[in-house]
Image 1 (cartoon, one colour):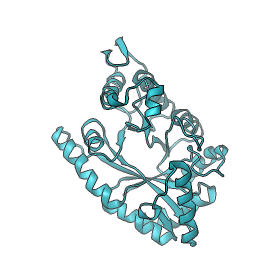
Image 2: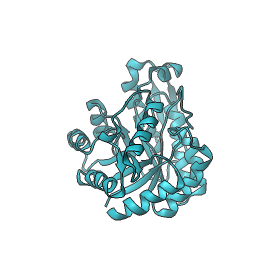
Image 3: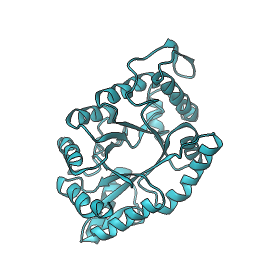
Length: 305
């Protein structure tokens, strides 16, 4: 049975949303039975305010006790891996082992440059960062001298509660990202603009990479899904399209990948994701209101359970 999560609106996707409501949404998600909550990540954005994901998840951890806490996805490349390893271990300890780490390369060159990372070196930095963090979480003394960081016999305590570390999911749709998800991570988290058929086909690359790397466990398959449950489908589609236009600055055919329409139609779209093997579905509700979150659970998710 697939697990269902709620993407908390820390990106200001909807300009009418109040960040003060995020904590209440997290509490609602736990009360209803969502398995996890998720947050997005951006450093710079010209039109949408964005709350830093790990700070926010630490706050959410303090007002919840059961839901897992995921990033979908944090940009690993411009974060110092020694500091990030400490942040994630701390979050995992404070939440009693509820962290899920979704990470990606990122694509905004301005964000890279502002943190001293050459965009041409981002893949190497990404892989090195994963290796550094895994070694630190294992309690190993880490000696490293690379492009941007240097450490001698570095040990970080306490380790995460989860062993050997919190689940790591890599985001991205390019073949390189998919292969890295199979080789270096515990699974792949597909973005919100992938269809079920695209997820199925791309996941095969993840599987092949995991097999070539000698992994015995099947990689986790997760996906973000934008959902707008409404009997007024045309107006709901226009609303979702406007949210995407505001955030991404471009016209997007949201009907191709988002679940928009009445509860039955939305449930069928989710059912198709489950059929192609998606195990963890991070539902991003548009609008992100208490009423809509409850509607999605009671009229869509519960019909699939």
